Image (cartoon, rainbow, N blue to C red):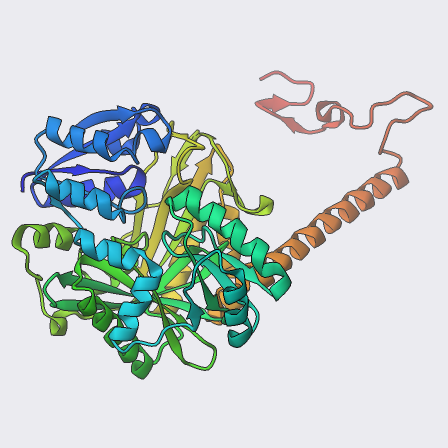
Length: 507
């Protein structure tokens, strides 16, 4: 395997290409017309244009990507995450073309991509799942009866896909029909399948995932867990390892469960088994992400294992590169996702030219970025700009270092969530590790809005006081009697030394 086509863009494409260079393999980028000068194109050894800006005509165009692979005589395809990464038909087409697909087998992707089938695999492996209903999406009566048995509220979820799309919380029977119809429309548009299922809503849970590597023949190792509870709109914001919620016994139970599910699915390559933790200490299988995860750098920093290079090596050898007892963890790591978005406007994406992009450089800091100064953020793609990841000897040090790194990060151009991230990391509840999946939207954002409103009020009061003091001194506003300006030229009122000389004197 000498030449690998990376079927993706942005920071994950750059990340995979860095691993390819270390393994002595050539990298091939694919790009849309809008991405002709993008960072992942500049990072590649070769690049092939595959279509217009629209993802459907470029990064989701499986046939055009395979055509590009044939043009450059690639040996393999790495899908990254997103786009076609969890598309079983694409994986099968890659293998049918005689290329290596660097990821799970197509049949495994199909199994785990359907959350209903994945739940069945977890049950078969002896792993607890969230109580749910997996009937026909058009059977409103059956869904209502199941929800009544589970107890309100419930979650309506798309059977395929992820990222919070096609998901809705339903409080009562009267809301269920419209919620299911809306979720089905979103699922059909986003994933090409309107299938739904219901899950019991678990109040104030934590979201913890376990990184696994498998050889496709039952050999599986885990690389411990990542805490992914800090989310907005069902999307992760900050991830860390180890999880502050786990003791040794619960950690062992979670990692054993993840390995059992991966073995049940004959898992190959890198993947992530996700769980919900209820406030009473119980846990439930949620899903498997059959790909490399966005937050994989957190695991790499604490274990010293390069997950992308492990994917590449397994694709060549078909073997795991190490045994479970060789996996150790040192210190703590935390990652923040930097987006071009407006947290004060429902986290809506922002597009435009990046006028200045600067990240600090520290020995304990890693930045995975897909942009640089002068690049443009397109409204057609995910607005994530970079991931900022720090390591520390313990959680407190890792978090303090992340706050420092974000304080020193500079992004000029479209609005970003950088101020939001700084505020979030400074929040006492977040810093203590006492948070849950809905804490950001239910508690932190309202608290932040109140603080910003209070600050604005203080500024108005300060301005009014300053104005009144000027009036009392006879210097504010315009002296209507004399027609004097409100703010005279400072040079006219200056005494003593001036720039490069004295008042009334030369230079």
